[in-house]
Length: 307
Image 1 (cartoon, one colour):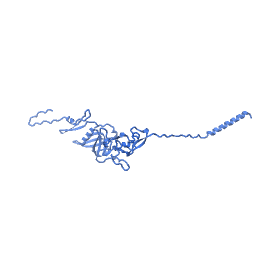
Image 2 (tube, rainbow, N blue to C red):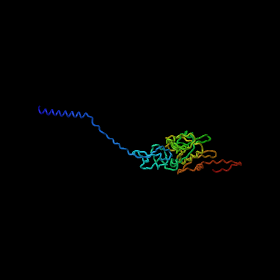
Image 3 (cartoon, rainbow, N blue to C red):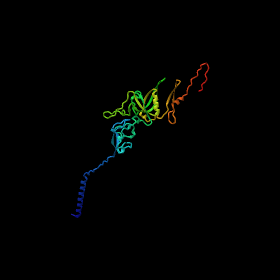
């Protein structure tokens, strides 16, 4: 056999063996790649939350507060944190809640008042007054008026033309109904056996409604209570943020009823530049006085009295 053929045969055998090796190795599944996932825990901070429901006007207690882990990325500046106030449960004890806290809700100092003056004075807005009037279910939307609702106050009086009603205050806030402040039941009421707060209910008899009023509004309401029957008309929640249209805080225009010589007139008192109420007597004096007609007694006309 020629050497050239021998070399060609060897090359063919080597190429065939290499091809067979490659085909055999390519049929095997590749080894699986292992993916390692590293879990990085998110940084957390402890914040103070309400352990149980806290009602409006209720004083905080250590047993109603607890620390809870909170993601640092979700922290807000107003939250009470363990790093900023480690003794917060003790420091905030006896603070008064101006708004409700629900279980698990973060405690914010903006919703608290550190006061020793009582419940109602702590929830009053600055410059406002708490004025109470007697109401019944019939005169208060069937007893469905609850604290934080807004109402109009109507005065019903008896006149020669019959019963007449007029709005004396508009869009004023109800602070309390009886002893109830807020939606979580009576202030200072004992908890149930399971630690729950008393369920709010409507009232079906006479009770006391406490309204949040400005000084001028308080005067208007107290004066109206002596003139007739007061009623509350419930307003829509959409009206809560609307400006008060009658008897707004600081407003000093008031209606004064003047009766002279059997005739009734209504006089609106004005206001000074400083916003104080003008003396009502000045408004009364502004009503023109009707002098009585002189009567002749001896057949002669009496002298004319200058006006």
